[in-house]
Structures are given as structure tokens and as C-alpha cells.
Image 1 (cartoon, rainbow, N blue to C red):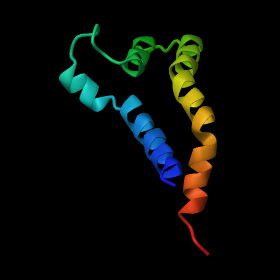
Image 2 (cartoon, helix red, strand yellow; image 1 turned 180 degrees about the vertical axis):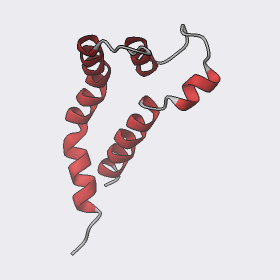
Image 3 (cartoon, rainbow, N blue to C red; image 1 turned 135 degrees about the vertical axis):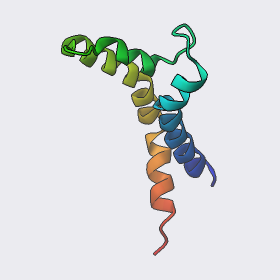
Length: 86
């Protein structure tokens, strides 16, 4: 009975941790220890942006979360539907 709720919590928490850029910039100042989502800033400059490379890198960064969502989708929907009784 707890599988849908745990899958929902796992997906939402994973997205939050994956996209946490503020704590990564504070606690991991070196680029070697930085998460991959922080590397997206390398494609942005002061006066110009490399939009093609930024779009490709964004798709690569989002791929693991998309795969996890697709794998756990049935549990996520079950957790949302199962929380509403009526």
C-alpha cells in the first residue's frame, strides 16, 4: 500500500535535489565537484548565449529524471489517485 506514496515522494524529492543549484554553488565552489545541472551555466555568457548547445545539454541533464518518471509513472498516478477518497 505504501509503494505509490513512496514513489511519489521519491520522484518529487529527486527533482528537487537534481535542480538544487543554490546549495551546490555555496558548498561546492570547485567545478570538479559541481553537479551536472550547474554545468549548464557554462553555455551562458555575459553578452551571448550558445542556444543550440544549451538546449542539447538541457535534454541530456533532464534524461535521467525523465527515465525515472517514466519508470515510476504508474506508482505516481496510483499515489495521487489513492490519496483522494470519495
